[in-house]
Length: 415
Ligand SMILES: Cc1cc2nc3c(=O)[nH]c(=O)nc-3n(C[C@H](O)[C@H](O)[C@H](O)COP(=O)(O)OP(=O)(O)OC[C@H]3O[C@@H](n4cnc5c(N)ncnc54)[C@H](O)[C@@H]3O)c2cc1C
Image 1 (cartoon, rainbow, N blue to C red):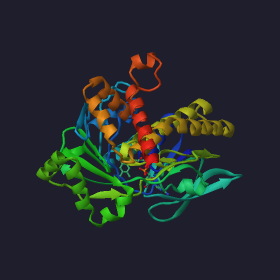
Image 2: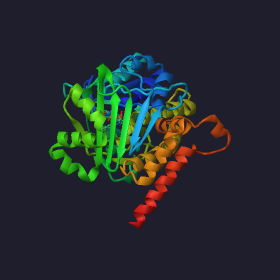
Image 3: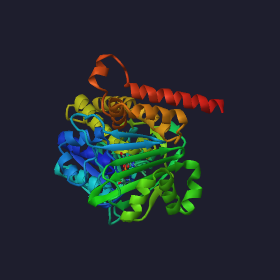
Image 4: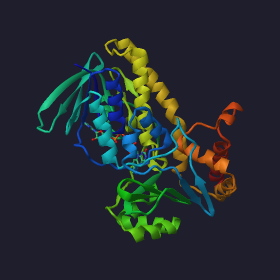
């Protein structure tokens, strides 16, 4: 009997497995993929997520893969913001490592912490006893069915989670998809993180491994069927109209890979946990990728789960009452930790840029302090100490953005 079986070995699964093994638990981690293997992602890890990597002692390894992103430029209409987030736990840079390198690194660190990792191994069923999950039935590469038992099964198996389906985890909150996205990699197209926003458009340029720049273009969901017919042409036209300078640099350097994309930008929270099982990462909560929060949210959930298990169960998962109490706390605190980001993401994913938003950015551009506040809010950094001391609940910039959103909603209702 293992203490924990973790299904899925990417950002959520590998980091959870690593933390639980470091805490002394006997952990089996399985993934149906064989690593190293890429997955759909525009790669950006916000400062808050990088701070977790730093806390886990992994930042040096990640920083060796790709450039530090400590400068951001954000163009909206004729306004241009340039700056960076304040440090989050001493970390000022974001990073954007290729996922086949990041996920493999996390899985390696899990194994180094003592995790038993079986890749090419698919979980097909859960084992139940007296209404409690007590293990999994899986098939390895040789297709032989195997049963493994554990006190806790962690579903870190992504948006289409098998563990969520088999436990019947309910969808607690759900919103319709709002965007679709296409991206690919270009030679040396940008030396810092660039963002461009216009009505119905959102473009990002993200320097990553090997001197390449990932350029992503977001469209409204309703355009998906039209765009996918000739996705490369639609993607290039989107970048050309919203970010002509970037478009010219892309064509100068040349394209390094095929185009990737998805219209499946789902938004939901599922029940986080039950008797003997828990969901972390995209399995339990998914949001549009536009605000680049999924990796950071996976790390936050891994840490939260490890902390609650360590506090309630004191390194021993055999006490079911203590385990259930830890899972209940995790579920409650997961929701509280992620719900604001969820609503901010839904708002950004509307791809709506009314004139008053442009005017707000124009005004903000002349004030470096506000620009820093803005990028800090984007990167998840805490507010400035002077603002915390004054008792303000959010920085002024975030309040401005809320007000802009309120006005936009009013406009929409009026229409
Ligand atoms: C287009 C796009 C762009 C994105 N860009 C960003 C970004 O810039 N920044 C950011 O922070 N986030 C981004 N995200 C989100 C981010 O990629 C995800 O939030 C993150 O990968 C979630 O990690 P996870 O470990 O929860 O799940 P996943 O990465 O989905 O991993 C789940 C793993 O489970 C395995 N698995 C599934 N079912 C089984 C089974 N039955 N048995 C065994 N194994 C199984 C899979 O093989 C997979 O390896 C983006 C997402 C998309 C789609």
